[in-house]
Length: 463
Image (cartoon, rainbow, N blue to C red; front, side, top):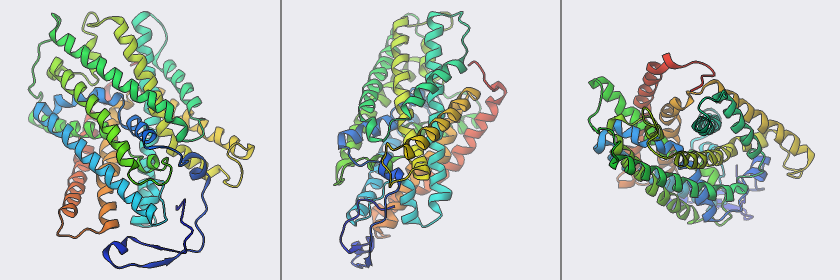
C-alpha cells in the first residue's frame, strides 16, 4: 500500500541496483486507506521511534530471563541472550533498510503485510504475515490486563492478605484502563506514554537487580546451585524452551508499523531509534538475568519477583514490592497500548472512511465500537485463561521467530539480491534456516511444557 508517493511519472525497482533498471509507469499514487491516514500518521522523530521500539520490546517478560538461564545454564544463557540480541538488532536493521529502499523508490511501505504482499506476492499478506501479526498483537493485548491484574492483586494481598477479591476482578480493572488507552487516535499519540514506559522499565529492572544482589548477600540467601535439573530428555526440551523464552523477550513483530510513525525523510532515523532501544535492552536484560540467576540459581521461578517472597515471609520490604509492582503495572498498560495499534489500524481500514474527517461521527462511532469490543474480548480471555503467560514461549516459536528472525532475511535477499557468493547472502540464509528449525523444535518443546502443566489449569483460576 504505497503512501507519500513521489509525483514523478517513473520509479525504478530494486533491479536497478543490479544495473537492470526497469521503468514502471505510475499514473496516480494509490489512495491512502483510513488505517494509514488516521492510525499510522508519519509525524514522529527518531527519539519517538526509540520510545516506541523500547516499549514494544522491553517489558515484564524480561523478568523471566533468570528462569531461562535455569534451562540453559550460565554458558548457554549468556550465549543465547547475546546472540539473540545481535541477530534481532541486525534483523530489524535489515527490515529498516528494505523499507527505506522502497521509500526512496517512491513506494513507502507502512505495514508488515504490505511488505509481504509487495515482496513475496499476493496471498502472503492475508494468509501468513497478517494472521501471525494479529496473533502477536492480540495475544499481547490479552497478556496486558492479565499481567497488570496480577500486579494489582499482588499489591492488594500484600496489604490485605485476607481480602476476598479475585484475580479476574483485577484483570477487569486493567481491562477498563486498556479500554481507555485504546481510544487514543494514533500511534504517534503514544510518544509521551512510551517515554514514561522507557523510564519505568529501566527503573524496575534496576530495582530487581538491587533486590537480587541484596538477597544474595543476606543471611536469608538461599543455597545456590547452577546445574541443569531433570532427565536428559527434560534438559533437551528445556534448552529449546529457554531459547523460545529469550526469543520472545527480544521480539517485536511490528517494526514496519513503528517505522511508519517517522516523518519523512526516514533515512537513518530508524537506526538511531534502534540504538536507543538496544542501549536500554543492554542495561536491563543482562542486569536482571545475571543478578537473578546468580542469587537463586536453578531454584529461580518463572518470574524472578516470586523468589523475593520467600517461604514464610517476604525477603524485601513491602515498599519495594509496592513500587516495583506499580511500575510494572503502568508499563504493561503502555505496552498493551502499543500492540493495540496494528489491530486499531486494521479496524480503521475496514470500517473507517478516509474521505471523512478523523473525528467525524462517521469514523468515531465505528472506531469506538470496534476498539472497545476487541479490548472487551481480550479482557474476557485474560480472565478466563490466567495461565496465558505459559503460552509466551509458544508465541515465540510460531509467531515471533518467523516475523523477527526469518522474514527480514528473506525480504533483504529478495529486495537487494546480493550475490550468492557474498557473506551477507549466506549469513541471511543461515539465520533463516536455523530459525526455521527453532520454530519447529521450540514449538514442540513449548507444547510439551503446556501439556505437562495442563493438570493445574482451570478457567477463571485465582492464580
